[in-house]
Length: 339
Ligand code: PEP
Ligand code: MN
Image (cartoon, rainbow, N blue to C red; front, top):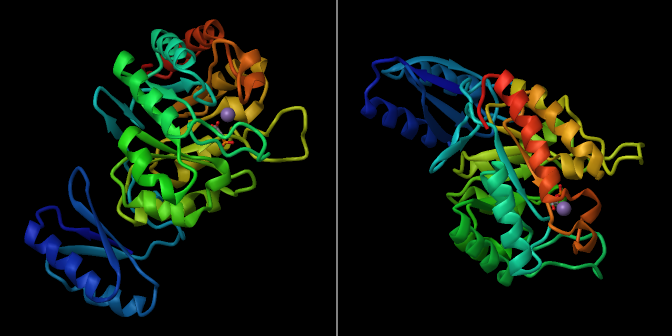
């Protein structure tokens, strides 16, 4: 339920409401809005009517409204303003369009450093690179693990770019947390609930990819797992879903972008690389993502795609990435945003 406080409510009154809610076995999630504090109260729904009538009579409470959607905290019902994730000198979800780019996997120091310098020069703000790779075949390259994390951290030192890397297991949360700026949860782990809960206890933004077969509701329920544990900084990423079409690697659901913005206050970014699997399609789909209102992109770039350990066929050369950015920049400015 959504408990709206009167605009002049005191801190003490807000605390009282939160404690009262907890006494019913609910969790309280206060959100400071522009005018007033709104408290999201989430529980099992038992005795809801009774709790609503009690809460309505608590001093400082203006109104109590049940939340109809199952995703309580990430939905628009509770919070209308978009979530903006501040990353030192830029932010995700506000009026900036943020591009994250880099190789599918971290392979060698030189490979990552060259890519990092190139994507930075083209305007990317975040360097991507997998150190733990969730591969379909156990015989394929599985990632450099901690060595890869160290190389990523060194690339951050050299360039000032933030880094994002995939976390594939609960066992590695502490270790990856020591290195990364943003956790990436891949499509295959979208419903790894133990992992989501653990990431919900960290203080780092989590980029959550849509599962291969996930509906938008399932996707938002996974985001809810993270936020309900206390971490509000989740970025949703549309990366294509599996359909009958085989020409493209996945079918990028462009309508997911405005749909997620209708349903949720979280930032939404698009991964045109996994979404299409084909180099020539990546720039046009990136432009479409801007037009659909996406908050950014996650793009694979490799200095020698033909030698890449993973996803070479969908990796752009640095020069192609520069062209993509030049194109995207025009659409972003038409939209009144900046890149
Ligand atoms: C990746 O980003 O390299 C990746 C494995 O993506 P996804 O989880 O979308 O397949
Ligand atoms: Mn990849």
